[in-house]
Image (cartoon, rainbow, N blue to C red; front, side, top):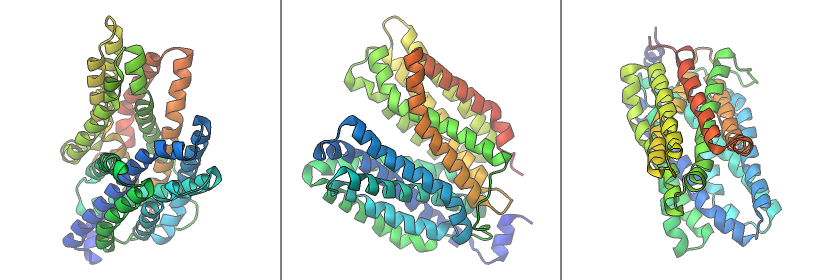
Length: 393
């Protein structure tokens, strides 16, 4: 008997499943939008507290450490009480903490607030992915890519709306207004989350080899995304001679391509399967990075060719993480929350280590060499797809 059939017999209706999907969509959009608004506040925060780049880096590290620590602890938490209540509480905390960095009086308070901000956002990330995997199983069709697409859309909306509001009001008011606007629909929908059936024990569960493989691949994918985030503009400006107005287009096109790829990913996974989608995505990402390298190998450089390559890379990587999270959430060991937490934690570690690793490689060789190594990572993800992601039954 399938899990979907068991859930139907337990009283879960198709209407409840569809309603839970909309609640999960709201959670992903809220999480992405809060991060997008936060990005608009960092320069103002630096100026208001007169922070040097090094001190600002320490403060941002507190956010990352808070998120990573909370992700490690989220597996037992999800196993004890389930993804629905954790998503509800952390969403309120994450949105509620957004205005505080603009109000803190000094660096010490800033570090404390950012650690709490990162912890709530990181725990929410794990919980909403676990809830999304549960809803996906109940619906019996892929939805994880579109959920991550809503996160990307939220990030773009937060950055755009936040930038428009900042000239009109103080940073704290901007953050509070956006938070309130996000929490109204979320609170209306949050009662529709599905309770976790057999969420698993609340103790620490060590990931098995399959989960470790999923986490490693998630780390490689996030590492690649982080590297493009931090280094694409520098490559276009310094290596290819692009003006500043063009250099930022690399990551912009990359993000837009990822959003498009994610909103089409569920249909592609339903038709071809997760392993095929991941394999094709890895190959396409490697080909896109090949164009990035080709853009720097022709004459004085062809920035538009490289930007096209970043776009193809975005499409290729767009569905790797959703497929991995969906696979982790479909575990039959009774510890789906633990598996999602492990994959999330390892993936986030990739975000933290990727950009500095690229910097070290670029310092020793060149930035082009670093992007070539990322292309090799993409080929590695493609090669491991069949082993990591089972065929649909």
